[in-house]
Length: 316
Image 1 (tube, rainbow, N blue to C red):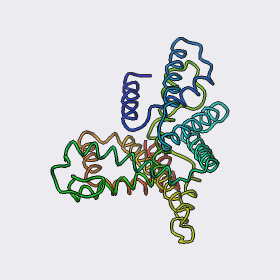
Image 2: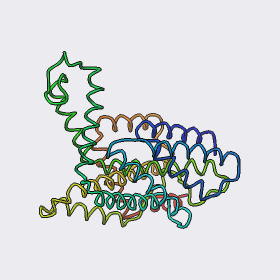
Image 3: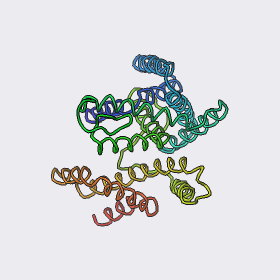
Image 4: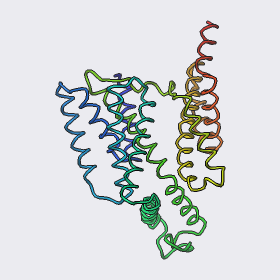
């Protein structure tokens, strides 16, 4: 691994740790290292450290929502390691299968325990609301500003309504958020595993510009959209929305990968182009995300990167 790749891996690890539990990385990393039978000192040290952190994280007490995340991480990590050992799919394919297995296992566990998903959602909304109150109290103490009422008293009314709406969105789409965090953790664990192991098993992570997944995922999105649109299926609407959120993010990432591939094909965007892309992303984020999703869907149907590569090779 080159110094540049190592630097990117470190930055990715720090960024992931800022937005997701570290256990989502160390749990699958332990499984991968165990299956490849570590023999070097570096492998054994990495396995011991990862196992210690993973056991500490799994054994911690927490709310129902926290336990759901830990159970899903354990199921996904074990499934991903087994698929890596005995399967031949890409990291994305193995990750999606692992997340599906984890979702099924957690759902069955909740049903067996008599816990409805609304209980998990309530804990998420309560925890997120408490965190936001603590953060906003630093800027708007209860004695200042216009009261917005409810849990966010002391915060200006318009901001309070926006924050409360965001809390509800997070609670409603908590399953999608956890699924995406697990997928990110599996990808990062794979990168670390191939960096540490002397004889890694399974396909490596690969370049972002080559990111793709099975076109069959489109049928999952279509089925979820049908559930959302048909009133008689309202009971399953929340679950379908979470599936749509995950597929939407994956297609957006695919569209971004197509963009990076196209830019690399023409020699890169340069400093000015990069600055323009950053500004566009900051100021017109919904349009950028929507365009990336559309581009990802088009690429799934027409394989734009293969066509562009063939055209570039023919013109040389």
